[in-house]
Image (cartoon, rainbow, N blue to C red; front, top):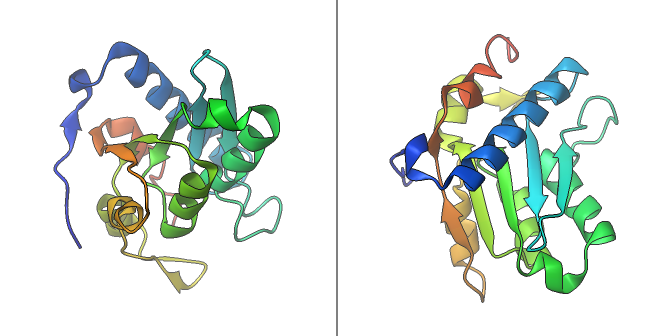
Length: 167
């Protein structure tokens, strides 16, 4: 597993930091309603924001990750052209499934807070299923178009939202 050192939060542009913090707020909202603590937002070039929360528990859907839910919502609301100029911000590095959804949606830029290597330290299995140790950069590298990935970004609240959840 390749580890990417975390970036300090002040290395991000203020607009990126604000959207990333919004994604973490959505992760807290998902947790508060009984879902896994993950949240994400897509920001289109015109500033339109689409939100996504995890719904694995409340919808009884193992594919209801924040990013896959977000990609579906963003594709329904935005044009293909807007998606191809958008940025996806997520509280935690996208898993392989979510990375595929992001790739197929044509989203060219991903910014995340908590790295999957850190998530694995917090939770080794979800509902008895071991976590995939597959960084999103590795998945994107197999595609035919570049996707800019920024992260992990050192924001303590991205890990804190998981505190006590996975016991």
